[in-house]
Length: 292
Ligand code: RIB
Image 1 (cartoon, rainbow, N blue to C red):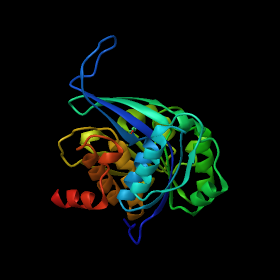
Image 2 (cartoon, protein in one colour):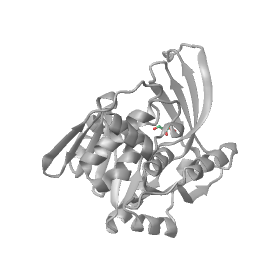
Image 3 (spheres, rainbow, N blue to C red):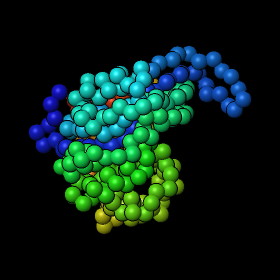
Image 4 (cartoon, helix red, strand yellow):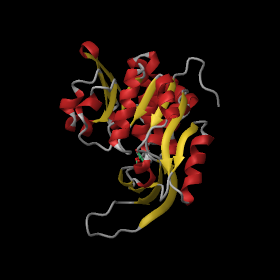
């Protein structure tokens, strides 16, 4: 797989998890036991998913993250290399890899509990990491690794004119100086509500709305909206990551094109089970847009 000739160089700093996916007709309420219908282990993690999504959407991608010293680590690493994501910045740290326990119901809706494991060990950026961030077109981050590392990377990116795209998920309050370094924020509608004041200072804000598509607010109060292609939903896990990775890969073509491209990628990612396994290629995204 080769990157497009005008493909951006993207560094994704973030988490990598093994997803433990249980399907069930209906998710249990507190105190209830229900019977499940299947179980699968699928590589995931918001960082790794977004890295693979951006790579499949046509960008050249380097992933910075950490796996543990356990049986999951080799498969997690291989998932990135199989998609031609550079793992030069992937370290192995003591202890277990990150895992996510995911319960998926027959409507394709999920509940997720993440135990960070090795992701918590992403506390330092090496000279190589910093050089890669400085040379990249875009730095993409989320919040499943220590915030101080995200803040340091964003600050370094800003100092070297690398665009900083933050997907602040799982949502939490962030230091003001981190927000000051963010060029593009990608949030879902719940996160947009919780972070409303912070997002006011971000130049480009993209709000994903699931099957309803996505909205964009840019400089000069430019507003755009994009509908989502209608698809048969199997699993929404990783749809936001598919959207974010594709948006980053297409950002150099302008917000309108990037939003359209990302909406198609997000929708396609819901049509099969699993996070990293459902991320669409450039050709699949193109075909979906042509069919619209
Ligand atoms: O966004 C989906 C991802 O969130 C899953 O792959 C899971 O690992 C959690 O990080």
